[in-house]
Amino acid sequence: MGESTEYNPFGEEVLEDPFPFYEDLRNSCPVHVHSEFQHPLYTLTRYDDVAEMLINFNLWSSHYGQMPRYSVQGCLFSDPPEHTWYRRLIQKSFAPRHIAAMEKEISSLVKELIDVMEENETRDLHDALACPLPVLVIAKILGVPTEDINQFKEWSDAQLAASKSSNLEDSKGPRDAMNDYLLQQINDRREVLQNAGWGEHNVPDNEKLLGEVIPDDVISGILLAEVDSRKLSDSERLVMLNQLLVGGNETTTSLITNMFWRLLSQRDLYEKIVEDPSLIPVAIEESLRFDAPVLGLYRTNTEEISLHGVSIPERSKVMATYGAANRDPDVFESPNEFRLDRPQEQLRKHLSFGLGRHFCPGAQLSRMEAKLALEEVAQRFPDLRLVKSPKRIEPFLLWGRKELIVRWN
Image 1 (cartoon, rainbow, N blue to C red):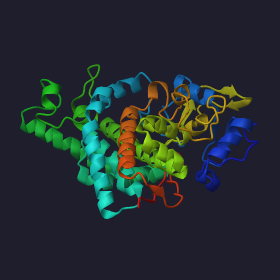
Image 2 (cartoon, rainbow, N blue to C red):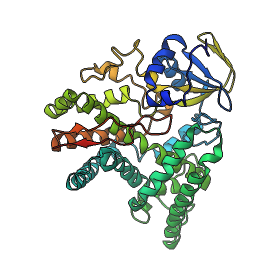
Image 3 (cartoon, rainbow, N blue to C red):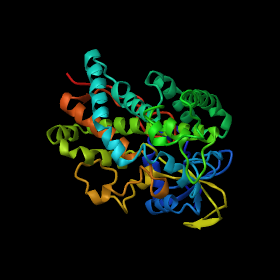
Image 4 (cartoon, helix red, strand yellow):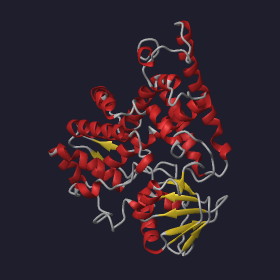
């Protein structure tokens, strides 16, 4: 049963549009085995199976990484209780109160980007708004100078593009370059602390130093943070910062481009948004459900299991396919329709931000950026139209548009 359906997660037809393949797998092969990789790759596509994978971390471990290859990254890609410890370190920066306090600043940034777009008559909504907005925001939260965001975007994209490779070395170059840069940022803060008469291990009160001696951002926070009487090593700090930077930009970019793509493809939907902005939160959740920015991530089972008649050996790589689960007809009515009248009880069930302990810490931030972008564009460009059908981005695990050519006059 596991090999009864032809499905190659890296195949050109699947990359172009994976959803018909997901539907076929859900119906006829809910546990699929792809054997043409360095090791077998399993794919689960039914909602209940994917949700169970996300909740049951004792069986479905993140220890060996969430990409197809085996890679022990640790930090946020680990299991509780270790994962809980690391997550506490970034809790303040992504707390609802902290994110809500950023709304005015992010709104101003959206307006500035659209001003430039309108003045220069830039027609690519991806390059003008959807791409720079999340990178600028995550750079500010982490403490990365905004003048370096283009370089960070290149390093991030290169690492994601190598996600389908079985060779860990394929992502080593951009990962090392990013780490060298981030380590310099950490060392710069160390130097400031030392010049002020403090070291990272003998600070009087972290809260007094943050914002007064060194910037109040994630880089400073994880330099000083201590949880359960332990501080991070530099290698742990670099892994965490890399994970946050890579995970915190392309996914929101894809949410924004996917959302505009679908609304403009069925233009009556965009017109409804223009007429009634209260529909914007629904449009965001429906976009997340319909076009999951992360199609899925991998887990590794800690023991051999049998599922739908298929035996999955211990320590197999198994994909929890959010994009498939979000269109399961057993959970979502008319799942292949993009609707602005979908009931809230259905919208709340989508898995695009994960579920359980690994629920995306940046979910509220991503939703806010999408909301502010759609509000401003709908107000400024009520006649916005899609010029041509956009192409998808390269990484097979992600689902987004690499350009979105529009016109408004």
